Length: 102
Image 1 (cartoon, rainbow, N blue to C red):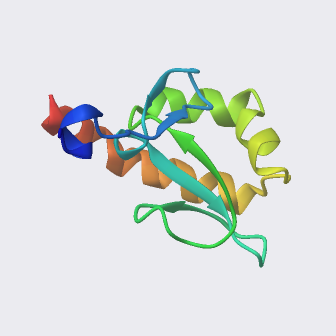
Image 2 (cartoon, helix red, strand yellow):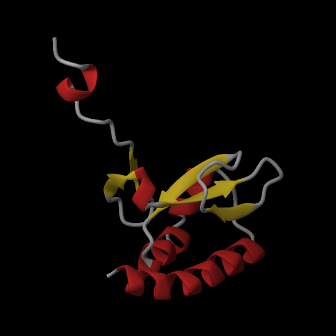
């Protein structure tokens, strides 16, 4: 009798990047969350409470998501200037990490 693990491959959750629209594994994307208090911030653990949206670790995806309003639509909130500034500072830190991953 075959075991369950041998008969079926492991399920990999997929998510869509709101910046570029690429569908990829959840673990490769970065979650941005709107907390119950209304704060918009990156969630590197993927476990913070609130409404979430996923973005590639590519700074261009983050710029597109903010400029075209895709992030606001996904999070169902209006981004304040402070939110945009904090996300942009996070993407500045992201650029060197993306280069290291290559």
